[in-house]
Length: 454
Length: 182
Ligand code: HEM
Image 1 (cartoon, protein in one colour):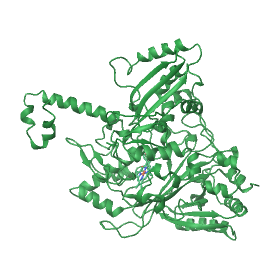
Image 2 (tube, rainbow over the protein chains, first blue to last red; image 1 turned 45 degrees about the vertical axis):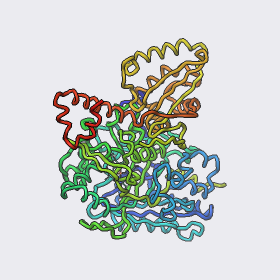
Image 3 (cartoon, each protein chain N blue to C red; image 1 turned 135 degrees about the vertical axis):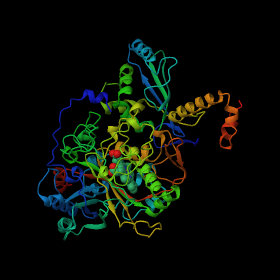
Image 4 (tube, each protein chain N blue to C red; image 1 turned 90 degrees about the vertical axis):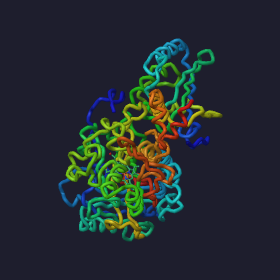
């Protein structure tokens, strides 16, 4: 979207301090991948700082490397309670984003985490004040993951006062797809100055300050940054959500609404905005095109301007809601560049075997991970304004068919000639099992935290 | 359509998806005439011209600027689809609103000019007053109402066809036939 601020801003390229930024946010997820999330509680301030000191030795920077051992990495983030436990001074604590200070559980009603998804039902310790530190280890294979985890374990050794309270393993399914059957992790913003090439040649790179604190953002200003400077700079906010997927219910629903397998595949694609292979509906409206889905140069190369009425990709489809690209440009009220996010989601749990339509009681789903400079106008905006209702597309009662808080009250419209298809009473296919807001500091900031003397 | 009047955690009352949004400013001393001139010019722009519908921001139902207290105060009053404060940064960084904002609000106290977003937000939050009562006579967002207008125009066109009465006899069209008489 051409904005006036854009015109006012000199198009100077930005020098990101890649040596100081943690690897996680800017590092593309390998494929295939295996990973582990660990949550820690700090019971003793000194032990917590010793932990941070040890983690400094195993957390990588975002500086590109040709060393294949560095294809596995660890990211560390702290919750607000965690920063408190480390003894971060009050004026500094006060300088963090209000949503981060409240924590995700306190934001539940706002975020649509209600009913079965409400914090009362969350998996413990998610959403409790016990969660202080989150470690995420990602790797292309289990050998390198084990090596990385061994280093994390050493960091925890003989450290009474820091307790491992939760572990979640994740891995890419053999199909390369997530539990509902779709290829994921395709749509990502290009970040100015990061060296990461964007996947959509139609979109200008997004200002680095939208994702990393301390740099100009899309408003031409600096994002609000925690103080002191050394703590905030090169940090990023993190959203972590464990989302259980009801795969059997989803399959039964598609089957009930479609005449045949092709019909079910098409309806599934209409709900996502892409076919299972990842091929976007805008580029391949009538049938899946696995070659297109697999081609990183083409599978994100599209806009919605030729499909404003949604005959190819419904306005209510998940990916179109989550990133409407140019679809809202005529509304005059939305600057899409303010609502982008880096996603680092992964898949957990085994696949529900093909064709199975009954729930097998096994937990499977997605670990949704967001990185960005603005919890409120990026993650919370997208969730509350674009996924949780349909005000912005002229159908207020409709929620995102996959990620919306569906309770049977909303529907989904598939534009079609001669007559649109309207699905009503959409049930929930996704249940929030818990989550946290975190802050992933830069490496200098980690040192500052380790050396706190309060 | 939900019609409950809810006071959310956000500033402003809402009815269904629509929320009221009212701002009250102090006019800079000696700028009364300049401001009136800017508003006259605004009234001449597309969307604001008499007979025009289709304002630059497609999610507001209507907008009014009112000078009061001997032109020492300016009110801006509108109804917005969605929670307005979620869209604050969008307003100030996307073309149409930004330009409109600048020529008018440069005449009010506290406006420091573009592009200081933090100052702009502070100005808006400082000027916003939540209504003490708010009601609406129709449900629906601007987008829904425009769609309803298009559908009604089409329906009237159908009714103007001499064959309409016969065509509307089909069972599936009963709800339309019920609306066709008057
Ligand atoms: C279990 C829940 C979810 C599932 C199964 C899911 C699945 C998907 C799939 C299949 C895609 C298309 C492939 C891709 O571009 O990666 C996608 C895209 C996306 N999703 Fe989700 N998602 C979920 C939750 C969320 C949530 C909670 C958010 C944000 C609040 C979100 C934001 C996005 C974004 C931003 C895109 C990229 C859109 C684009 O750039 O075109 N998703 N998701």
